Image 1 (tube, one colour):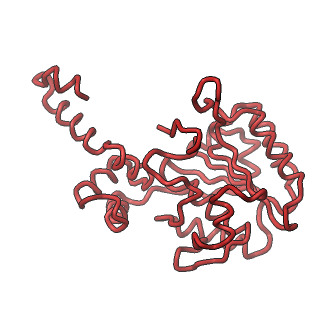
Image 2 (tube, helix red, strand yellow; image 1 turned 90 degrees about the horizontal axis):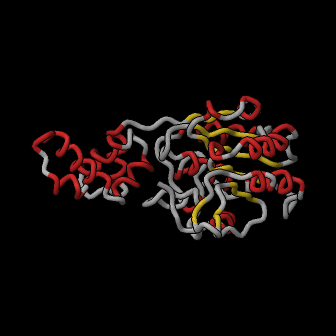
Length: 266
């Protein structure tokens, strides 16, 4: 379930911070290190596909990499791509005030008052136009597609043009839950960062340490329901999903003995 508030954005899970506002990332040191090394090498590939299950931290990783590319000072104690929320570059990115970052996501449909079902070709065409303009300070430009699975065929073709002609000092991050469904022409032009969910136990202890879960029981229940994906676990805790799942399980256990009132309540 995504947000239905045009101010929040179609890239935000309920109960979670917007990825642009999140400065920690749990469980993906290897992927962060791979990108940090590529960046430091001075030969950065122009397109990165970040894949993995929902709520695992793919968009958070994309924004962390974007901050680094756009010049945020490294903060090693916050991980290989860590940066401070107080850094001037991070503040600009968070307040959506930099012309050097483009976010492509499902647009808001003002007539129907809801998010469009897909990333439209008009949205995707913003990418080639964006990369044609030179950056404000002659530096780098970053485009994040969150998520690439939402592109229709025409949108994917529009984005492919940018992938085929690597932009000068430009980098694309494609967030995808189901990379196998993306056209091979797009996949073959991207470097892959595959994120796996941490174990339910590891995610549970992270939920407790960050104060997101009230106790060990709730933390473990949420982490198990989420398959270890930290973002999904957070969304379940904040949305009452843990309690709901427990009630559903009770009803299933009762089977035919369950009464109508309890079933209707759920």
